[in-house]
Length: 232
Image (cartoon, rainbow, N blue to C red):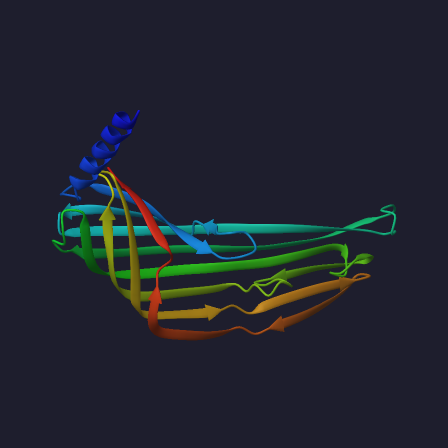
């Protein structure tokens, strides 16, 4: 048994020692594992999918994509025992992001591939809410409402774009698997849409508008947690 374990360990070490970095025509596909410290030991989320196509061993085109959508329905009853009429509040939000860029890879070592690059980012956030026989907090047979470009959780619809200069590195554990990290420095601009609320009570509609705004940042950021990828 000891000889078998030793042989397996030597084989694994040999595979890692001869891990091959990408060459012309290779494709990599990866995601990020963001570590989240909470009451549980460590939680992980997957924020985006990234693909790269290597034009040659030193130059790669990249694209990354993110889409999330969440919807929550809260139901209300007319009476405390759950009987009578039923009302509801449906709240939703979504995020879409697309990034296109290029990377310049350097020699590094047999398994380490450092790079710099540039990334153009476009993103959209959406939010909405609907009340049906509810005033937003409980049952109300005479009330309904529609919230556009926002919701009562504080989410707002927005659009944004940015440009980042990147620096990072990939470390190839084996010939087809790597881990990595990356940070970026650049510009991000966002515009928040006007939030419109229409509430109808006993047939009478009231409209209110919460004006949006805009903002921008220019700073240094880390782009997610540990990147995990495979090479084809």
